[in-house]
Length: 297
Ligand code: CLF
Ligand code: SF4
Image (cartoon, rainbow, N blue to C red; front, top):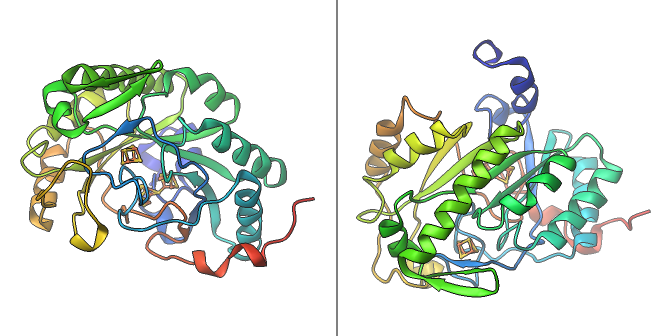
């Protein structure tokens, strides 16, 4: 509740369904899948599907242009009264694909000035976007941080694309790590609420996530969301994690419990699609297909 939060923070979380456990019963979020490009490769990613850093893998979202995305948001806002947040969570990286993310946010903010803007990123191109994030009143940013140790990172990320060059191995993971920490520091300093998502990969980073939790808490993360790797054959093959299983419910809870006492844990994540619409766990996306949307004025 509000009692344990500073008033200016409560103001930012009270109607955000992911940042406040209570709010998720009453407030809805929607995503528009306008950002297909990504600058890193996660071993657990299948590029045919949505970004698994934020979303339930194995689903293909309807890709929209910024103009189509904005039309959809406005139509949804008119018929879903609980709609308080617009999130851009892929299907690739919202910041690497910044031109499309920004255009969508600007079109929406012009017509719906009260909607909260939220985005999700792997963090690699976060530092250079902090000024614009603040200027656009984006108060909520999720960074997926799966490691703070580049040796573990090398098992999760086969490569990253940074400064016009492809990097591999521990060198790539070290660079990604530095950019994630810098971006987190910069956002925390500017009062943007940062949620950290970590994908729990049994045998790779399960024992390491307590250290991740400690580090991101020290740097001012507001919330930590440990999500299970979902690996089902029906969802296709991952890039580089052949035979990797996801955690059991008990294994997930064990890591979440071990992190308790550090950065506050999020326990109600539903691993939404990159085009999810409605209350968490609810998906009304198909009610708002493109042919039914109004034209922007
Ligand atoms: Fe979307 Fe993510 Fe913003 Fe929420 S989802 S961009 S912070 S508005 Fe929420 Fe969905 Fe979990 Fe994400 S339940 S997958 S944490
Ligand atoms: Fe895939 Fe990782 Fe890029 Fe998300 S950040 S789209 S999971 S490679």
